[in-house]
Image (cartoon, rainbow, N blue to C red; front, side, top):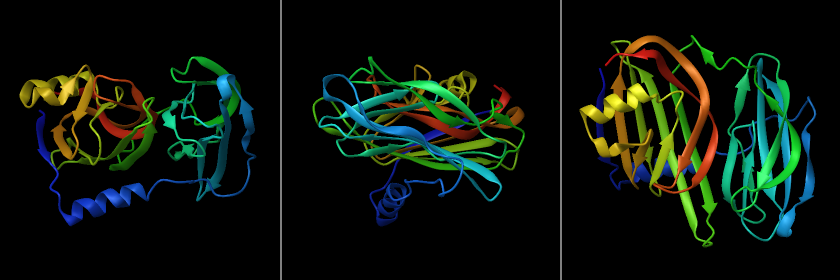
Length: 268
């Protein structure tokens, strides 16, 4: 069974404080230490694009943390797609850094390679870069609550900024179901998280209430809007999977890996 409702976030001090807390939560998460950083500085690409890129990893309290980064050293906004790393950022401003979300794995890390595509349409091939990656297994029987924020400022081709700032929470209900809450603080967005918010979840949500909150397999969130829904099923699990953020009916803005709660089979 799924319950869904959407509502607007009130313009009160608590809401403003929440948004500011999200904005201050982003940054480097890998402590200084071994193993070595992979990457290079001042990669010179076509049409004046210049950027640094890296992948850091270190052990922290028995867990391996790892993070990717790109810094735009050129004079125009930079869009990158680090293939096989699930790391996409649109419109990195000149002199700005784009850091991946903090990724963790208790198992020893793998090292993979992926071409960094760049340019307005990520049409140019950049370096074939090494990066740290978790073990292939991405699903777990552990079912801890999920709570994360996504913040990104994309500089579009028009040189206008497009602001992404939302919070996602998933908790277990008393009936052993899952409840999700998404709160959007800035510009309208579409969220695609196909391995967590599966088609059965989205279809049931759309059929029961507020069809306009789901379109083409994505959640639709307007500025200042929140969405809450719950569902039940069998085979509850934590799932690490790519989450993508789009301009509504427009281009991809952001992609990274987050862990959410879902079921192997959702009850309808």
